[in-house]
Length: 270
Image 1 (cartoon, rainbow, N blue to C red):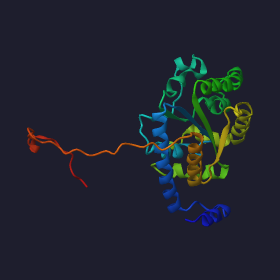
Image 2: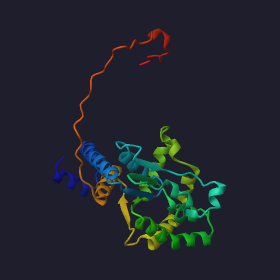
Image 3: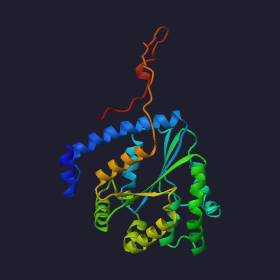
Image 4: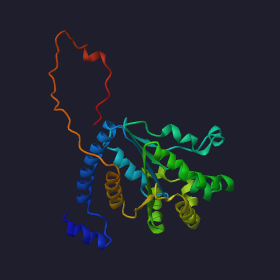
C-alpha cells in the first residue's frame, strides 16, 4: 500500500488496509526482535505500562509485542485482585518483584495505576489511600528511572461508541466472552467518573521525567502499529551481528530406537 493511499485512508477515517497492516506488523516485529536482542546484550531494564479503558485494545498490542520475542527476556505481568496480605502491604510492594532484572523487558497489562482508576471509581480504596498514591507515584517512578529502568507509559483512548461495540461483540462471541465481566459492565455506567479519574491521574503523574503517551485506539490496527513504532523509538538499539550457525549432522551410531508399538500415541483425528 502506497503512502498516499495510506494517508487517504486515514483522512477518510477508514480502517487500515489489512494487507498493509500484516506486512507492517511483520516488519515491526522483526525490529522488536532486534530491540530485545539489544536489551539482553546491553543488560538494559525496560518497563512498559499499558493502561486505558476496558476494551481499549491494551491486550491486543501486548500480544503483538510479545508474540515473536523470547519469553525469558520479554515478560507480561497481569496481576489479579490483591490478597488480604497484599492489601496490608505498602501499595507498590506487590509490583516490585515483577520489575525487570538486567537484560529484561517487562510489559505491565495494567499496573500500580489501578489505584487511580478502578479502585478510585469503584471505592475500593479510601480517600487517604488515593491521595497518598497520587503524591507518591511520581516519586516512585522517579526512583525506578534513577535506578536505571527505562519506563514507558501508554494510555489507550477509546470512544464510548467504539467501546460499546466491542463490549457487544464480546458478549456475542463465545471466544471473547471471558474478556467481559460484571466490573466491565458497571464501568459503562461510570464513563464520566472514569474520565474524571483519568484526568486527575494525568494531572499528577504526567510528568516530564515520566510522561504518558496517549494512543488513539478506535482503530485497533492503527493503534497497534503506532504503539509498537513508538516503543521502538523510545528504546535506542542497534542490530547485533550474530555468528553464522551451521547445523551439525546427527550421529546415530550406537542408538537403537525402542519398538514404536510400545509407545502411546495421540489419535490422528485430523
